[in-house]
Length: 121
Image (cartoon, rainbow, N blue to C red; front, side, top):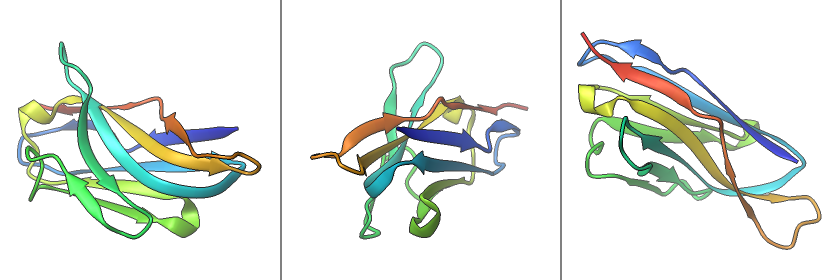
């Protein structure tokens, strides 16, 4: 069984910064991609950023140059450094990971419970 636990959300003023963390735990054999998605009020969940085990990254156009994704493979943890936050970044942020558990034939897709980020003055 695998769990993803996010932390680091909160209330911040426009232009401010937050750092989200997501730690994976359980019977993990390997982790391929780890990423972040978000769902704003009245909106569908959307892609934010992704990082592969190789270190390659992808970002949504809306966050390029402001957000940085990183991972610590030894800790099975992914981070999202968010700078220059805007009110439109307000959303519940979800961690996502493709994880192969011990004994499994293929990776499974796992989600965290979400952490609220509110950008407001």
